[in-house]
Length: 230
Ligand SMILES: [Fe+2]
Ligand SMILES: [Fe+2]
Image 1 (cartoon, rainbow, N blue to C red):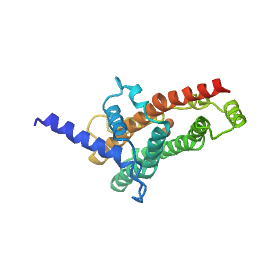
Image 2: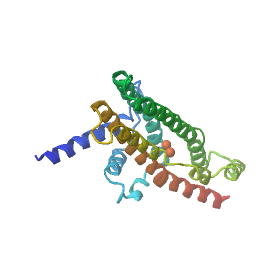
Image 3: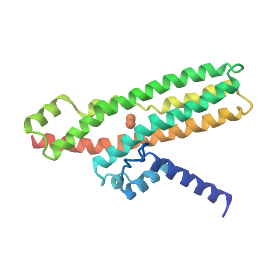
Image 4: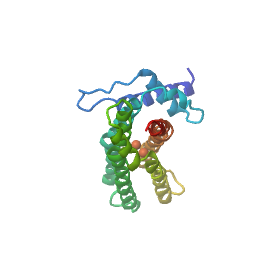
């Protein structure tokens, strides 16, 4: 096996772990059961989002996609963010006295964390519940009057117009570190931290792709169908 294939294999295993890990409830009780084919497709999306066959993923139900996205939100807030914060803390304990850039890095990350929590909260409190109501309307659990009321007060467009690319801001982290160390390589703990942040940025980008290019088109289609049936 060449070194490259070996590395690819390791990457694939790590990626698979990271995608399946989020489906475990931390109490270990409620594992979210997702179709294997859906997990495979999501992994393909991690490898390549240029030629990704969106039609294929759209054959799954909206509730599957929502379950995946919600499990991912939980995973970000309860596992990924604390892990990254832990690394930052480690850097702080090592270099806190000597490196000025640390204060800037901590401040940046703290602001970022709050923005991300806000972003997730908005989706959990408004965007996803609206989609769940559309699904209820589709299965006949809402009256005509309720559907009319729902469609006249809310729309997917209201969410998509404000759905910002929260991952872009993370690029700032590497710039802050490079500003500190323009020529030499930054010390190891910074590189570990940077790696984590870069992987997280990729994570968030794939997450947003599923929201924008899978969930939203499905929801718009349903919204239009419900509107036509009124
Ligand atoms: Fe999200
Ligand atoms: Fe989002």
